[in-house]
Image: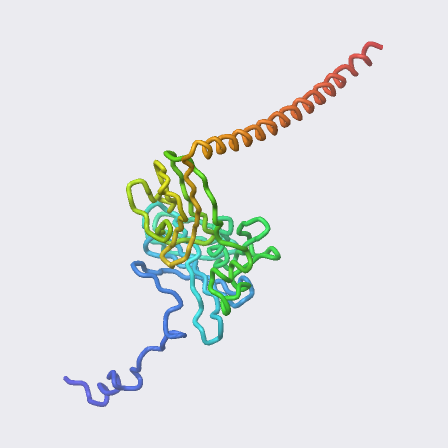
Length: 314
């Protein structure tokens, strides 16, 4: 029969015992990724000593995510969360069911296989921001490389001043300019490649402009690495070329000069010839040093071979 009113009222949504679920700290998840199911989770705390968390999550799409959550700028701010590494141990999207951290390794298992990968991946980062997002790593300004944060005098996320500056400005305070403005001279009719060598990570494609106007004709080709290739150079191609990413950051800048006069071309070839002569002189000097070393080694070898023969003749 029907349940008593007292019982139905007890379990109704209007009852205090059926109140809404406990909300997330700071009102939102610490991390969200669509189109996949996080099946296993492991957490490492305070790697760099600043209260940060590192999450390793195994998914049903065959990917293991390494996620860093750095404390907010103030106690009232939500943590800043970044995916610092995607581990893809297999060539397909087989689900990863198990995940265990032990020492410096991640051990994982699927229906058909088990494997291990290193937790520390500092040598994989060639961009400064990707390096410092990872609590295990820091940027070495003396070598321009990402290294283990166990070393001293490395720049990590906690050392940059994000309270006073943007990410780019804060990093620039430590490492200097993030790209170089280059001047390039080319002969008319030749081609030039303008590369993007920005020191921070760029997501997606960039937009190239010449003197502030977008370039899009058949002679301006955007390469897969965001470089701009300009073919069959004309005098009208001279100007300031700049690349801007989706965040509005200038990530490359060049001043291009196209040489068309006979005098310019002759001067260019004379400069190239002088450079070639200098290189050839250095090459000859290296050869002479090698010959002297070889001659010295050969003499020592001859003397060593002669001594036993002299002793044996006594």
